[in-house]
Image (cartoon, rainbow, N blue to C red; front, top):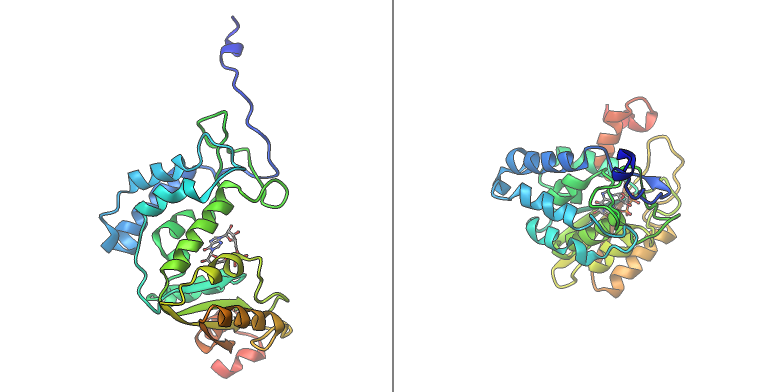
Length: 266
Ligand code: N1C
């Protein structure tokens, strides 16, 4: 028998989206150790080997288009983490700004400032039912292939838990330079808002930030933000909103010190 035939394997299915991030498992483990040993040494007891295994077990050898939140349950249990009340920061279409802010305001947590969010941030992953390996060639695209794909389902599950765990006054950074400042189809609008627990979340405080120099397109009084206000009212959670919240504005200005809109700070 020609050697070539013995070595033949099922080709992995081709999807429209980019494949698993190269060195996915090593990055995952490295980030787990960085987080639990250096960023938050109080979590030094977490077992990163076990966490890494639970992560890959959730999606390997499975159809990446029929993923369920249940698949990630063991991983969620191993990465349980308490965020203090009043310290949760959500964001929507404002990832960079929100993370810039938690970097200087170290007591606030976005999901990426918790262990599991930190590990998965920016990575892509999927498996294949006919192989025990990751598919580095392609993964399902949320729009063009399927919405129940391995990473969309993951972000839904962890965002849900993050919101369920929140307590006290919680915050959200929204992008006022796009038309849909509050987008009901975003993870924040679809998952997080509906999983806040009214019995322990007293208020949601929104900060609507405008890009420096952009035309003022949406603000606290816009219809999309009013929609958020209405949803929260129905859920008995108080709402407050501030345009261009000073401390975050200052960070925008540091990154873009020229425009006249920043002169106030100089
Ligand atoms: O859909 P979004 O924003 O409103 O999601 C943001 C919202 C945050 O409050 C987070 O807690 O949902 C959580 N979240 C993440 O933390 C996260 N990290 C990376 C949701 N999605 C996250 N990603 C990836 O960004 C993921 O691939 C998802 O599809 C995008 C969502 O970004 P968005 O539309 O700006």
